[in-house]
Image 1 (cartoon, rainbow, N blue to C red):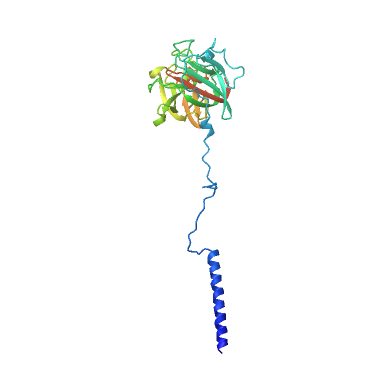
Image 2: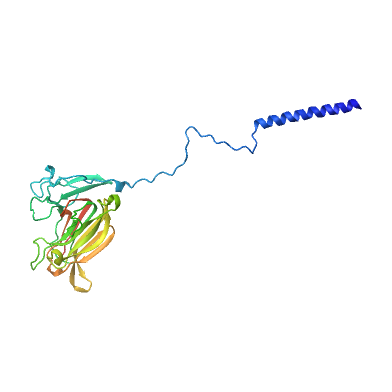
Length: 320
């Protein structure tokens, strides 16, 4: 009996020792759940494996062909013998050039997927007639007939980079296009304007306080045939255009039936700028003898003006 008890005790001791060894091995091989996890930095960490990319800048607004920095009123490459002598052989813009500026001649630039006509003028750069404002414009064929259904129509895309500035006076701004037309009964210029589209500068704030950032576009309209100056014209705000933003522009001048009296006709001047319509009936339609359109850059009573035109087309219909 003593031998049997001894054997039980021996077996129990051996089993206990084996169990202790197994527990000890397990404790060395697998950390307890109570041990905090240690995060090891990778040699080349990627804090954001799938980052959201930065916004891509609007390439249209970033591209520009603007003249910047100091400039002179006239330049050797801006001289021209006559008002029509220095046009390009096959200009992308329609119409006959009228260049009365010694700052720069007409040239072209490729930008934003289009070829642009470049119209740059400076204050005092009209060497042909110092009493008149500088300009580089294109004149389009006139419609001489006066019947209902007669019209001239110009389409284009305009970008405005800089306009004349006289420190916030009424002389600020540059004309980008105009409707013209002679009339009977005298009065005014021999080649009178009817409605001029005037772009005036809007300056930024803060670090942009000395920069033209957009342009208020106005219609300068005659009050009577041959009207000139503040007593003969009114200036009506149309809309604001951002600097360097390509903006569709359409101008149509012609004759239609007077909706109030079918026996009469209306001489109209309708514009569409950036998708907005601005229709206007010209005074004294019975005195009209023609309809014409010009566009480009005209008037700079201070500083410099830079206008760009692309995608220009012209249509004319004449009816008796």
